[in-house]
Length: 471
Image (cartoon, rainbow, N blue to C red; front, side, top):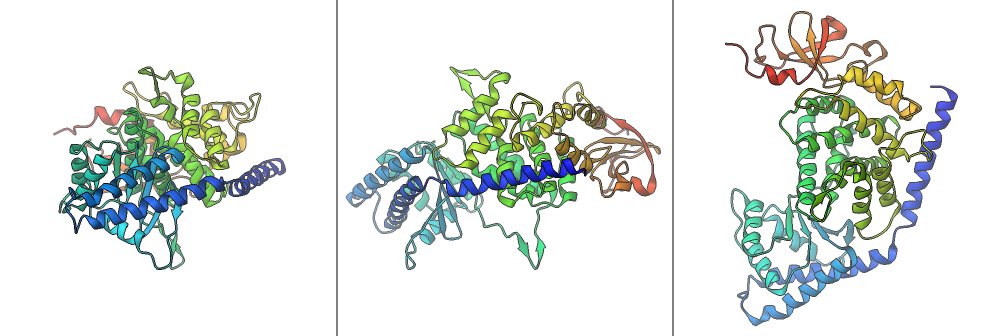
């Protein structure tokens, strides 16, 4: 790395560190105080009212005042925050990322977690406020006996039948343990991909249905990707590239996020910065789902629409500003009139790479190695040259997901990044078709640094044409 490049990355890291420090200092303390006060009241009322249902029939007049007060408390929170997100995790309660602190001898949080955890529910997302009668129905549903096989799904069905379609139930959460015995814990690539794809897909479904944006599940999924080892992130890139069944929007978002977090790790960004970068990547195309007067947003306006979605969330802090800037600028060129933000420059690389290599009915716009060459030719003009170099150094000549035909006739997909300078063009591959055209009976890996069997690059869409092996 040249001295100029070292100065550039140092300046970028110093700027980001200053921004993060400013974010912590400029948090809207007044809003947080009001949320804690209103959240405390809402949680106490909700916990107490559910507890009352074990003693009194819900038609008893004793529920009139609590139902009325619960409705008012939820309305107060909605007035402060817009959509209200309640997270119940290990006897602790959070309202829109703000922890509600009870007294040392209070058990309101634990009791509320117990009521909802019986149904395998760890989060409540209120898209709108509820009327008193809906509050009564909500209490009746959660006080009921959980379904033994599908408790959360069944509870959601009960709520829908009770005309409560503005409350979305979420699965159980747990606090992430970053280290155990000195070793970082990471999810395997397949599990992390499935989890992140579900979270992203749920966001798209909500936005398409006109519901409010809920970024918390996306943040959790992106944290799981950020925690993966380099080998696991490379394997996830390959899994996404070979996934021909999932919705294109979901695949694109997860792949962009995986690449962004790969570059972010190489920049040695802090854990908080990586989390913010993951959210930016997970929501960078959210504006595509925005409709105005029932008409889909034109592609050229989706970045602005996405930034407006970010702006619509209540509260103000620097992390939200970075999120809006990244979404707004991720199609801007590196040498444009105004230099895009760091997150936007990282997004630009990931977004263009996946757009060029993504599966389409007629095949990808470019094979992975060709996409890398095209992007390299535009370094310094379209792409930040230092960030692009980091990306290329990690994925090599044949990025994860590239489909190769080996000299012996087998087909294999690249599942590793660059392990050393000597293996820049010699990745590890997983055989997906044997020389006689059949699917391998078990996982067969080929290390091209040892076997040297590389023949030619294939378009991954050829796997579709060869889906049925010869008999």
